[in-house]
Length: 335
Image 1 (spheres, rainbow, N blue to C red):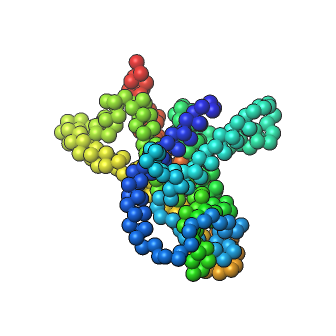
Image 2 (cartoon, rainbow, N blue to C red; image 1 turned 90 degrees about the vertical axis):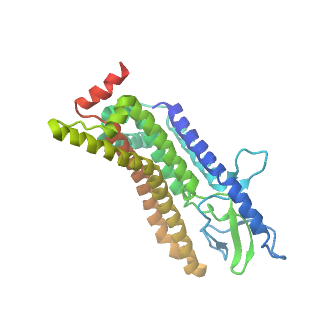
Image 3 (tube, one colour; image 1 turned 60 degrees about the vertical axis):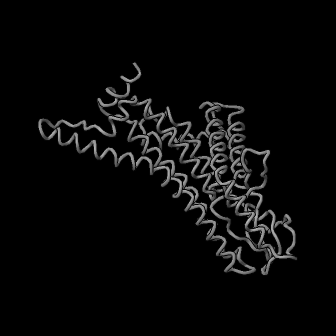
């Protein structure tokens, strides 16, 4: 596997996440301006604080953020605001790049240590994607799906680390210090991040579909009937498939939205669940939340697998050809 493709996919994800957040910048500024009018006198100035090993421990008050991350740096000199979820996203991406470098630094015929672990991951993903996409298409797209799976999995688990969401700026409240702007926040608990992942896949899906079918074959796959019916029945089916094709176009356009909210909803719900258990447990909230950490570890892995599975299936439906249809629209498109 060429490392530059992994790095490209990670940088594309980071760039899309930044671009998606730029659309929220004006709304955030307006919200901050309106909120400033309601600040009461005597409230302590926001200050950094460490909230304990477990989230919400030590008498601190943690509150779930909204659908978008909080800006850590913003201003006219910046093209887009730098948010805490973007920082977490960059940390995860750099960690994956570092892992890939260390695992492939001294390759051996009999793998050991990180190389052995990395090869086990690659072998698992190769078998998993090969069963969905077929050997040829899996080889062509493996770099993307493997990177997305590892990024989502790592980002989900990184968001569960102690300190993520609990180290940052805030003010004293009735129930202790309230962290309103954490330094780090789970990347996939930010709607901008999951939207960027979905849009990134949608762009790649169009590229792969056109490459496999050609422009005409791509449109034909959606609108044209390819069965063996003859006569009036064939004409009727042509009309039906053409009309149904418009519904298929709507379905294709909805896919990025469904992918966005499926991943975001599960991660954000897990974050809210942990917060609720911490509050219900009082001073021993970390004990009440501990079993749910194990549950969220499993959910994080499942969501990474589901996102990869769905995107791979969408790709296979358009690009995988097990019969002569691939030769007619795929191979022939390259000659």
